[in-house]
Length: 314
Ligand code: ADP
Ligand code: MG
Image (tube, rainbow, N blue to C red; front, side, top):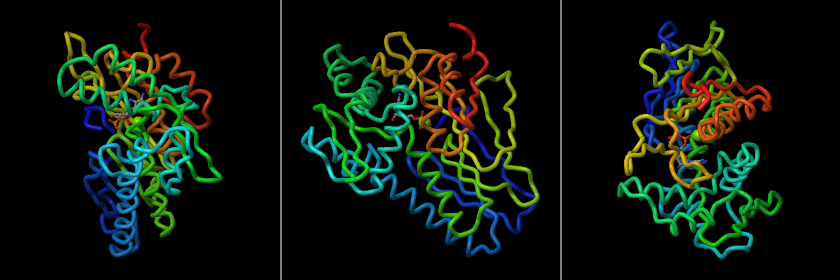
């Protein structure tokens, strides 16, 4: 998340002797941990293990790392179950579930389109109709099957390619918090670019102060006091690109196969887990405001914040 309206956790200063912070570049963004621990050694042990979990998720599920297990799926024959590691199976199954929940607004099988769009952005040219049609034809979560018992994945269309870019940071943040909980360090927050996963509040506090910035210079960022949940912001400002006079976002509209053209593109979602909030924030950028509100209203314990201008009728 490299945009102006990324989330930030306001750092703690009052309990400096028990508050430990760690930071590391990962998944193309900066990961930050804030934790309250009895000793520095305990905090460091948990932080190292948590970062290692995120590295594992990246190594297995990245669509940037050429030899990732995820990209290896596209080299296998279609219509045959592919045995995969339990970790990849979980990451992909969670993503497919979120695709079903959002009716494909968030869809991890848009890989052929996200790859094509990266090339279009690089070249400043739209894909040809034929290339776009082929990539659209090879996308769609209904063409991906996850067998939970045999831990296999089946791709049923030639040219399919998965992209977990809209959910993996949330999955990593959840996995990292789980490490801290295992070590009994419950007062921990994980920030992964625009995704924040919160455990118990800092000692003596009601919650973590999470600032939600907006793209609007005239609009103050609001501060929320939250714990034991996740907050994700997806959207676009600095990542927009203009081709033939039209401004496109980096999130793909599954209908057109191209970057979203609405402007601004932004959504913040609060949900029980960062896996959910990350995927839902991406989906809420794709959906028209009314549809985004309807989607979030039927998911328990979820709250949606849209920028004021995005809520206005088109
Ligand atoms: P960011 O990671 O930039 O903060 P997102 O969580 O919204 O923002 O993820 C955007 C990434 O997700 C894109 O770079 C692309 O890899 C992938 N993506 C783009 N459009 C979609 C979509 N409609 N559904 C699922 N993933 C998408
Ligand atoms: Mg997302």
